[in-house]
Length: 170
Image (cartoon, rainbow, N blue to C red; front, side, top):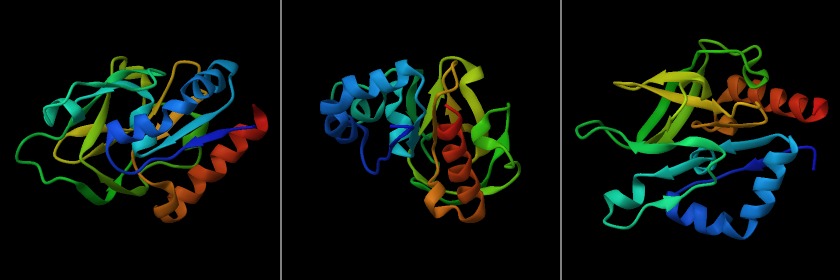
């Protein structure tokens, strides 16, 4: 494949369990330099782990660990799920965000990525706190959006075009 999309909707534990039969393949894709694009829960699964299971009295679930970090629940008192249109603030260059800055994207989530390395953050969004809305690994071929590009109008289309271009150039 020229590129792989890891979609996801729902809970981290179920997402990881559903992706588990493909875990080795996904790790191979990432290791080979092939672009791997996680969307929403798919992005969260790129990280090491999530608090999600712990908050429900279950043991923590291991993600793919392609981007070291943890998925964290929004603070007590914040309205969750975070649902709606919010602005993307680009923090660093990455081909996924070419032509995108200050644009709005559509979010639906209760947890957000907290990468161990702040350089993994490509863009942030403010929802009572600033959280990473686009992340990428150090090599740049594994990346994800917390928002849904397919529901984010022209901004989302630009990001999807950029993904296709990344795949063509890989």
